Amino acid sequence: MKTLTIGKLAQATNVNVETIRYYQCIGLIDEPPKPASGYRQYSKSLIDTIVFIKRAQQLGFQLSEIKELLDLGSGNCNDVMSMAQVKREKIIKHIDDLTSMQTELEKLIESCQNTDKSQGCSMIETLLEK
Amino acid sequence: MKTLTIGKLAQATNVNVETIRYYQCIGLIDEPPKPASGYRQYSKSLIDTIVFIKRAQQLGFQLSEIKELLDLGSGNCNDVMSMAQVKREKIIKHIDDLTSMQTELEKLIESCQNTDKSQGCSMIETLLEK
DNA sequence: ATAAACTCCGTACCCAACAACAGAGTCAAG
DNA sequence: CTTGACTCTGTTGTTGGGTACGGAGTTTAT
Image (tube, rainbow over all chains, first blue to last red; front, side, top):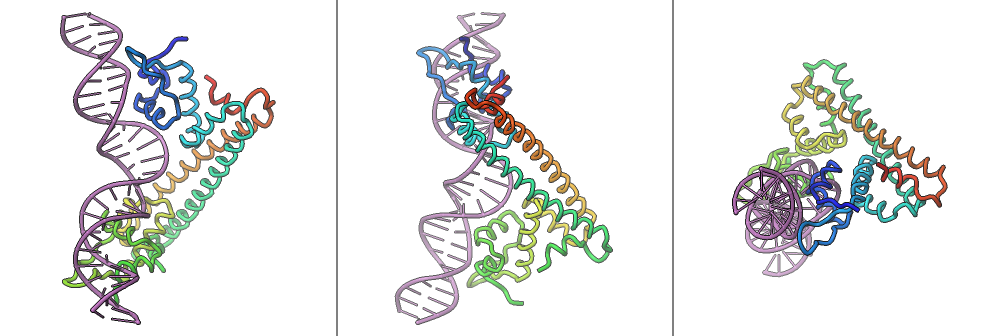
């Protein structure tokens, strides 16, 4: 099995060297042992792991959660699904909150548009009101 | 005009004393001058200002943006509206991103549900794939 | 053989929006 | 007049996901 130095691994995954070290630091990936001479050698399977991490991030998982997912592995599908469902609900909640913001903001914008501007900005005044 | 100590102001706005100091520190609100003897006295109008800050935060504005809004004040409705519109678009973009996440996540969950679990977790394996 | 490039290791820094704490001063109630 | 509660001021810590830097060791290319 061929191995890589940290720089090559970073290149292969399109990630900074520092980021890989950071992942090691928080226990997300293992640090290979330091050989008697030369640099640490990284298994090629770590490429998949790092790609996994990046994809899971895209799905909204935090690194601490990704660590859990990696620890669960492929053999605990029910637990994995349950994490995914929790995450899905959080995303939905988040969307909900943002949608309320959007609605409120649009109301304020509209009231500004319908108001005589020489009377002062309706948005500012609404937000200052008791 | 009656004035308040910082603690009373905090109580009236349901905010920590530390938070008010922080707002002073970043120039969001003015710090009243220190009297020759006794504590600093805060004008009651600051209650409205702090309520404004909190409401604007709810709408997704950052403190630096809220500072801009306060500086603009009621006399620059067009600038205020333009900030609100920019914010609105960011919120929409954010919702969009979250919706993609949700969709992806749901696809993965479904594929897990439709797959024989003794074969390994479909979600984990998809994310590990090249 | 020497210079450029890479690695190692630790520490510090970045963002936002505060929270916590320490030590000293001040005020108000009993 | 003392005690407890409040204020003042400055400094440090928190969270998440990294980035940056510095000095020393190692490897690779010429």
